[in-house]
Length: 521
Image (cartoon, rainbow, N blue to C red):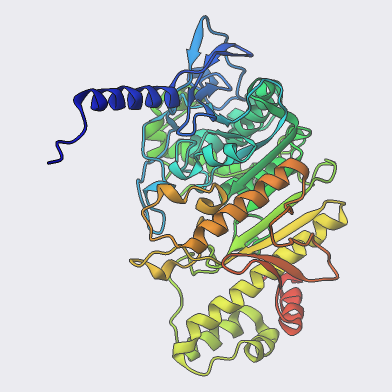
């Protein structure tokens, strides 16, 4: 009869297992950075070192609320960086379909939040690996570097140093006000969240070599509001020279400005800020700074807080920053493509044709000849096909401008729907590419297929290759053509990889005319 393993065998295995677990999570040797010594931990892969919660600026509290971020104060001894920092203050919504818990912040929030996380597989200081800095989305009101899908261990294992920073949100990150502008040395206000991003990039420039990163090969990448942030950093004189390449995921260039809101002028932002202060019952800046941060977030109401054309951080015209290698793209069922802006119009031929006449005027006939509705049942698919064509051509026009300025540009169209039997209606939704980009399928409870793992391995490799040398192409990958205005194609990322036309010639000509109109409709 089998009596099972000997007790000494079990004891030995238990000790061995505990030793292995300890090795996987042991504290690493301290690293010296500006401010002092910092220690981290090992990841599930013991070759990856992880540092969580490193301060890149002083806490923006008290008199530093609505001020430029200040360098962190030095500390004595070894600072432990082995736990995730709190998010910047926000209303925590733990899920909002299609964004499940893996896409949303789940932990604590604090006004003391200007920290970053680093993942590195570098075995030695000054190994000079490419650096990838992620800027999270969330409409400038939500998000953090503690969101599960942004875990950088897999990408770090592929050869890059990964950094994710926090930045201030909502009224704490983007409030403009006449009195704030008056006290500023730059006579501006707002954009504090963008200033945080630039401060993190300066910290990375000055410290990343200690983690095996190359400060001359920094790629900043972001999605949604993070993509709009990347675009703002590209334009800002204050971010010039802080990164060498950029990846924009579901942001500027995707849709006309009226669909994807852009920055507002300083005077308008100051008016909004004064209205907000009055609604909060604050008669002075001292009153505003005395209000608890959670109350400020809760009082935002209908006031929109976002990036501001302030003439200092964001100029009215693009800065003279030299051309950089760029990637820009979107998902097949992205915001504005999937009907994500309010309730869709009725799915009838009558409503569809009326909508076309309202939107396109004299061009309505051309639109309806390209996208003819023969039955009510076919209307939703036609709307989506037209929106996808419009978005690809809008992106083509954006890329044409960047290429004319000397940038090498790569565009993409991601069309893989996450396998999700409970919610097939979401398709390739806004943010649906993120598990593949970070190669983090394992953190999601989804019935992944072999195809999904192959897609994740390829897309994450494209991103790593781009960070290494400004070109996503490499051995074993489908060729990704760089942008050429005379060849209107984009890269399809999904179950089928490869170049695809942006639209057929007649559709392309139509949307070029529409998007060239003053209102971009």
